[in-house]
Image (cartoon, rainbow, N blue to C red; front, side, top):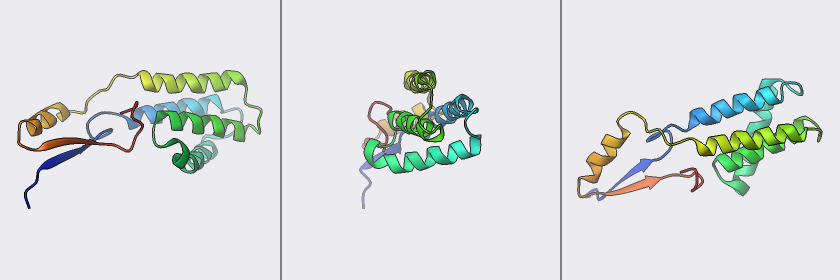
Length: 130
């Protein structure tokens, strides 16, 4: 069988992505420190993300909506609007980060583009994020 296409997984294979989620999750924990501990918050956020992926898909927007839902839940509907605003701001910060390629990613894609293969970018993430 002759290989005709080469697929590259997008985020965290070609460019940094996960670290922005980790930084935002840390910021989220700081915002809600007066309401719950970090471990409990992280558990609740993960549950919300898993539950919501079928509705929102995988990406920053779904992550932000899951953070808002989690904030409402852990504060028993008492989360201040100021915190919701800061969660939204954190999501917008994530969306505004320029793409930072991983070392040698550009060279690898360029080398493959110079061949007879079709190059395919594979992602499960939100189109805007990717």
